[in-house]
Image (tube, rainbow, N blue to C red; front, side):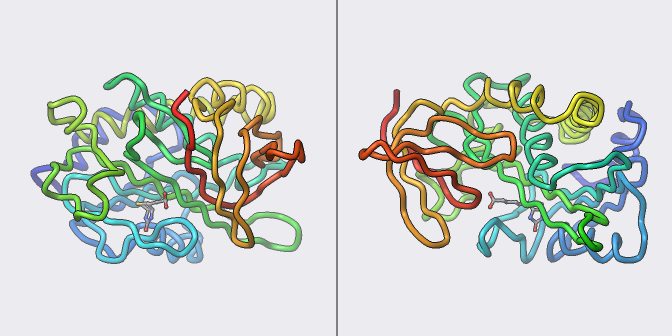
Length: 265
Ligand code: BTN
């Protein structure tokens, strides 16, 4: 199917991956690509299945928030069933964040990743990732990784509440981005990162990820589900947790929350 923003045939012709996106489910509109991908995964759809929608009517963000998903964005989810063991869903999220940051960096400068995996250009968020998984005993049967990237969104497409904190590749580059090519590049980079993760573990992935983590070494405020912590963001651990040193020198390891930068250095 082809629309003015996306062509499934174009994506297929550009894709150089072995597994990711080998099956594509494209919809002009869906409630949420994560939700649909979960339904497919429950029916046994294979590793690498891609669900993509031109708009989402109930796009889901992290921590129960909604995700603004008008036409012009790249809203997609992948079903991952890694054959290697062990893996952690949060590690898979980092592989996705790294692939997204690397792809955006080919288009615009100053792309950064803010823990856990928000994609920023300077102080403006241009994308986010939502990971969901289903366990079977102690193991994960599948993970759904949903990526939302504000690709060709114009200023007027952002509601006023988001205008000061969000941006898009189109606004920053002042040029439209070809979504099928962008996605083909992202999926290839992601597949290569997944290969590194399966062969060498999470450490090399995390090291590459940290090159985009400009918030490390700065003062941050982290809203966790239970409390707010202020201090210096000092590291991200091999389990994907954020380490913050507060003003009393106490070190907190945080596994879920939102980071705001208090300084711009
Ligand atoms: C965040 O809160 O930063 C994560 C946002 C994730 C949004 C994407 S868009 C594609 C996929 N489908 C959804 O409903 N959410 C994710």
